[in-house]
Length: 208
Image (cartoon, rainbow, N blue to C red; front, side):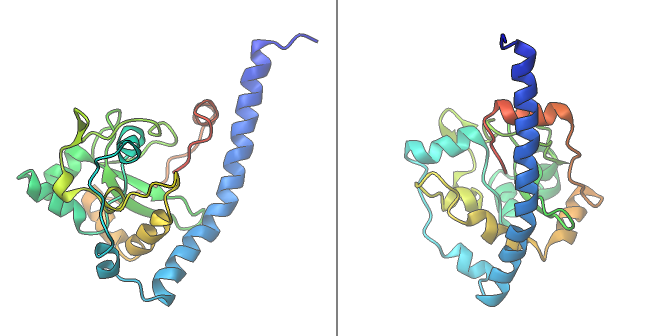
């Protein structure tokens, strides 16, 4: 039997669907663990802010800027706005995307810089943002370096996020009203469609 192009497309589609189903089952446990970690260990915002921060001077750090931005901790967006001399509400509308840790029953929404293909002040579209550079990454440099997001500031060099998504999710879990206030409504996780799944498969399974 000859392998036809439509067979490749179907394989990518069903492979993407299976991959996202597995991710969906695992994310609920991960976000619960993040909340429990923040509660049981007494990890506070101050604890997170005292972690050693990196200088964005190596290829490993810059690769993150070219792929997708890190997440802010609560209160950091306002610091970045002040750095640029902007009102936080204007900064949010122009430069910030609402991302999420997609727990099935109760997602946790977070803030991050938008990527170049996104509009500010909106929820991140499903899958399509991955692999896109940060809107503040200009000429190989971060335009808000002095007030960059927590995840960028403590970037790890081991090829994984080093647990920062879990830590930041735990920090944002008690600030969901603030996210809704910036948006002017309660945010919703985008609904997946077939094009999203195919896009995720073609991108090799990148995930939030």
